[in-house]
Length: 96
Image (tube, rainbow, N blue to C red; front, top):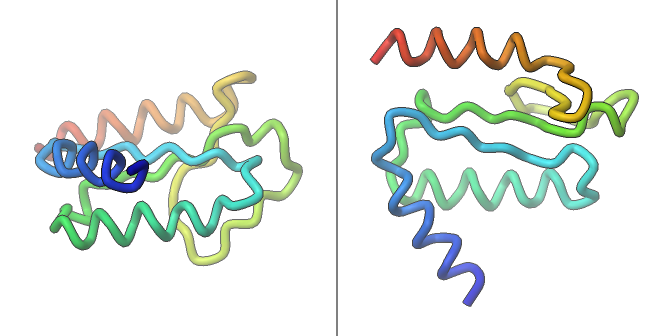
């Protein structure tokens, strides 16, 4: 049931001007969870150019493992990377 609810939420979000996919860097299942979200978004026909992945909790890891993933690394707790995130969001919204 959880997967159905998750999919239903993404179905609603897929028409948004921008999808912000926030992932928890400290999650031991990070890469698997990212893969599931990306797969469902592809199946729903989401515009891959309009998805911004944000890796949060950078303050918890010295060197986060992100092979093959593009996104912004931030810490909501310390503010690390937030200015970069805001600049990127402004840039993306300027394109719409």
